Image (cartoon, rainbow, N blue to C red; front, side, top):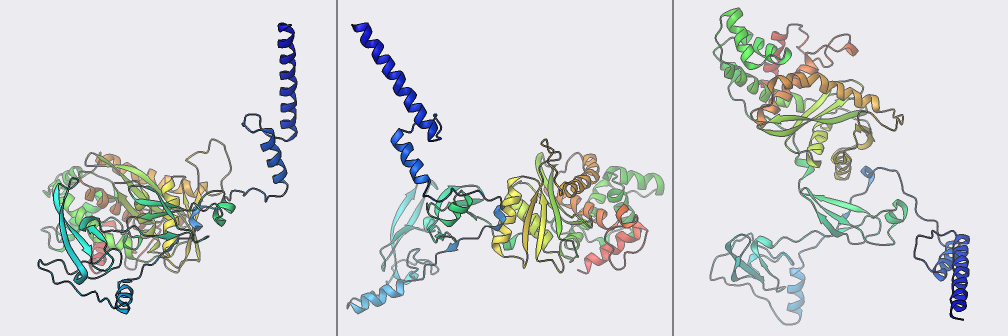
Length: 469
């Protein structure tokens, strides 16, 4: 009897399990999900009346709108008026100890005349005594070094307050957690805004600094200076070999450190020439970076080229490979463009900093045109997916193949300013000296007064032009 009871229970279990599996298969649900039959039935019935699930948009993030910042007016005046209407007048404080006159309340923005010098507090983090302050109007108490208030951003799609999600080295990331946001329903992910710690309007290309010497007052003729730049920059001879060249062929004794000083000073003069002279470009630019060694560290050389005209627009050297470096290289190149089209296309690889830099520039409204991202995956795509923009990416790779041999001969730079000067001089050589097959073996850029084929004369004229800028 006991065995028969177990047998019937086992058969009952198999029948119920079969029915359960059969119902779930009819409802087209995955067996791996721990859903009951009632939950599956309710989901199946609601699916007939609910809206279709949001489809992910392949539109890149460079078109995302910036958030609206919530404005906090100085409402301490409103508090004073309200208290005065009640018959209570808040009078200014007569301080016994002087306090900074530029001090204001972080909450109501009351001036220093309404702020108490409250007490002293010892900071374990800074290991020093910090002054406490207290507002007489709104009773807010704070420390001087911690008076900053995080901004309040609103989602541009639903006006929902963005929440501080995560903090990085370059930015604070805010996120919209509204489940009914239009962005979430149409993009299948939450709206995210990055508040960067740098100002995109103040980004400038790397500069080697002031000239080490005045090239118009050196103890050698301009021909010697032009020949030294020709040998070192155009032909890629190191400083010691250039000095030996002068000694063996002309009997002129010049130290290699003097030649280094000349090239550094020339690069300082040519910096505005490379960065500020407006040029006409096509509507397709290509940007990429490569590694270079300086002072025992790895740096990153960013180059922005015109994909159609094949000339270098702006070189930039950065010790970091981040969003700020990519944005600086792009902003420096875009500032040179004369009569730009309404939309520019930027060809780059899939490194995330380029997407974020393009998004930052579009959101800042720094230029009267917009940028469109055209990413290309690597040097070779293992999936062999045809990409019409890969040929533009190969152009900048060929440029790095042209510029890198001169860097390999240096075996790295002693200082970061030396690396910046080297890249500026390489840009001058590539644009104004090096013959290009596309231009019938002529340089891609020709300035007024630089039609000469003599490189020594060209260098001297460039120095005169750069000194007059």
